[in-house]
Image (cartoon, rainbow, N blue to C red; front, side, top):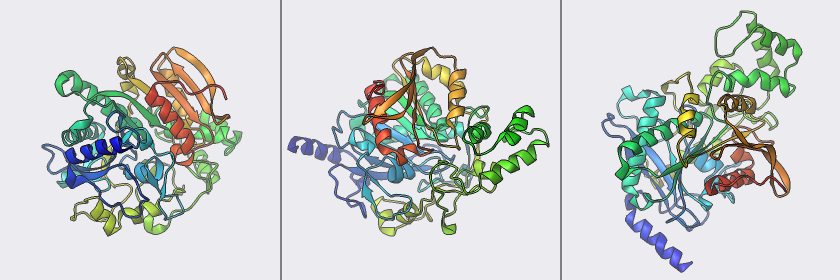
Amino acid sequence: MFWQFLLSAQIALSAPLTHLVTNLPGAPSYKFQIYSGYLQIPNSQGKELHYMFYTSQNSLLSDPVVLWLNGGPGCSSMEGAFMENGPFIFSETNNTMFTNPYSWNRIANMLYLEAPAGVGYSMMGNIVNNSTNDTQTASDNLQALLAWYSLFPEFKSNSFYIAGESYSGVYVPYLATYILQYNSQNPTTSIPIKGMLIGNPVTDWNVDADSAWPAFLYWHQIIDDSIYAPWVNLNCSLLWQSSPSCVPLSESMYDLFTGVNYYDIYRECIPEQPMYENHKRRWMIENLQGIDNCVPDNALILYMNNPKVRNALHINTTLGAWEECADLEYTMNMSGSYFLYPNLISTPNFIINIYSGDTDSSVPTEGTRAWINNLGLTTNIPWSEWYLNQQVAGMYTRYGTNFRFNTIRGAGHMCIQWLPAQGFAMFQNFLSGTDLPLSP
């Protein structure tokens, strides 16, 4: 223990002391390091991305570095850090911070990035930067990552992974692709990327997200044949222009979904307080009118706007209030990220793990399975139950040696927040490169 403490001290001395968080307000005691600061994007007219970094509780010198990105587009990864897989988290209804026994920094060095510029406490710079897109976000995230490695050179030899959820189904494959391209051109400063882990990921608009929503409602007994049969027969769509006869059908879907938790249909709907309304999932709000956000992050918003927290995290004093999601002019590539997968799958020694909380109506499992099936991969391990504590934790299948898909049974969009033990078990197996346990 004393030897490990000495190693931790050496890391702290060589990392940027100006970014060291010496007292995180409200946090229980801890023995790892926390850093928070800004990563400048070169030639960007003032973009600086805010990051938080938790060193591993296990072996920080050898454990992998994992970058976590939340989605949106335009939502802050502080949600992941303080609501999902960080060491200190809040519940949806309790403003008290508590230790997360399933924190991912138990076995990894966890890096959280607020991206794109203008999200959370990241600095947008020139107002022209409010307009962005998938490729610009990937480019900026790569530059931020290179800047981070220049501040933390101790971790250049640690294995590196990218993880995220929701619209990170676009962010993560794009960034992985940009990193691989960078590595091929810069072998002496390459990033040791080994894989990616993405939950309920927006990937192919043709089959998942809104495209899969009506089928999800039907197979979960929220709409019946009187709506779903004509919806299918008329080839209706929530994303693309379709027959005028589809409009009353979609309105009936919205009506029947009233009061249901969009992100987990079997969880209670906790209405968000009006003062905390934000721009979370603008595309969902525009297309699925009248559906409430049932997953309030009131405690997180209060915490991130606490002056003592801002000071502890070295937040730029010129910035205004922190919001979970920013109102960016974000242009999404309607091709999603599906087209990037063939090259990623063919990359040697690159592990891909897709996971899905199976009660999420936002990016339903049905849609995720559809785009995976469309890849035409050879099944190596057939659709099977996987177990945790002698209980079925979900379903699992593997294609070839490097592409895995698993569900987390009975959890929705933020499934690692709501079923953290299952999420941590999945994370462990992902990092170790082993299959999930298929027997009790």
